Length: 189
Image 1: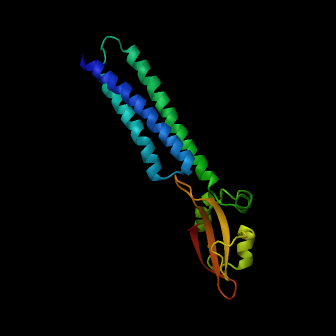
Image 2 (image 1 turned 30 degrees about the horizontal axis):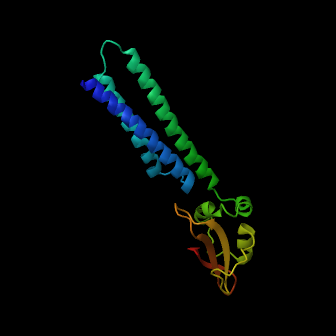
Image 3 (image 1 turned 90 degrees about the horizontal axis):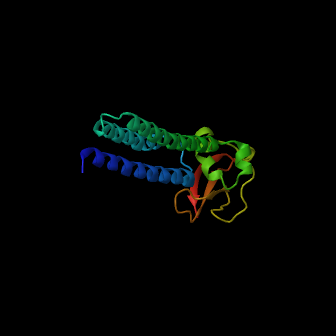
């Protein structure tokens, strides 16, 4: 078997692997509600860069007399590979925008609070807020006996984040004697 055939088979094998990798990426992004980060973008770019690398090697070892066929193959494979990359980046961006905290989102999407809570904690200083300010921001607490103590309020956030969602996540805020928030915790039941 010639070197060019071996290289072409290796390219086709990687194209199949590439499609599988991006299927896993799409499933993961959708399932865990992943957002844009340096790590997520790097993980998405690496297979695409390898795809271009394998195509470059394949191009080098293909028939020198007929450049049209390898050129069309290069364009088709690169375009489809790039489309999968863009799809994943768009999904990350959508998840990022859906994770932005607003009081309206918090009140209307009780199960989705688990994705809003990180932005809430980063953008709003809960410590020092009065009980009324917390209620204005987050609405009235969830009526539950989970984690309930005399000096705290509890908000249901939804199913825990991650691949195996057995428990629920909760935001627990404790108040001092003058009804000012003194600490908070994210808990799972």
